[in-house]
Length: 201
Image 1 (cartoon, rainbow, N blue to C red):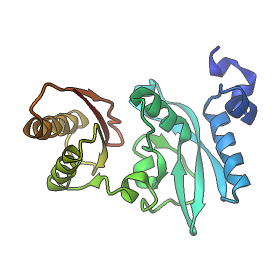
Image 2 (image 1 turned 120 degrees about the vertical axis):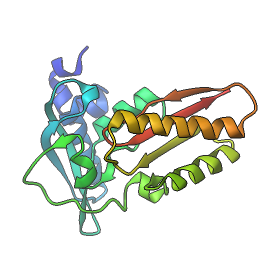
Image 3 (image 1 turned 60 degrees about the horizontal axis):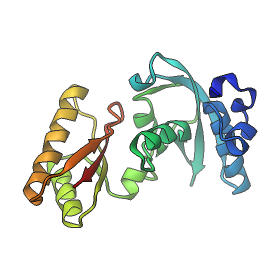
């Protein structure tokens, strides 16, 4: 059954009980859980501009207040990226307007200035320089980590050019540290400059 053809997919029941919901139902469910925990949360309505999701469509997500700062949380898109990667993703967890506006459109909401609560900031996986990326890759490979998941600073280069550079850097670093045949699975989020790689031997 398609979620958008199911009446309860737009509410909490569809999301939590039936496991079948569109973005509005998911956002309402997230707000309910936050309300139960005493976390100030609102539902945001706007439009999505993510190329991977086809044409521009109406979309809903959440805005959460943390220590007097608002941040965006898009559970629906993180669920989608997680399903593609078979790995829990946080591309849209506690992000600022600066990041959210890369593939969302909205107006008349509280300003979200900080990225300090984002997964990438908290885990030190947001890189501005090539050296930072190289150091991270080398460290993870030395630890034998099969997963590489990080975000880089938005560049003036085209998205295709950036993806190509990142892929080459990852492949180069892996080849220097591994002496056996390996396979590399990728699931990038191009607009957000979030990169996911799984190394298989």
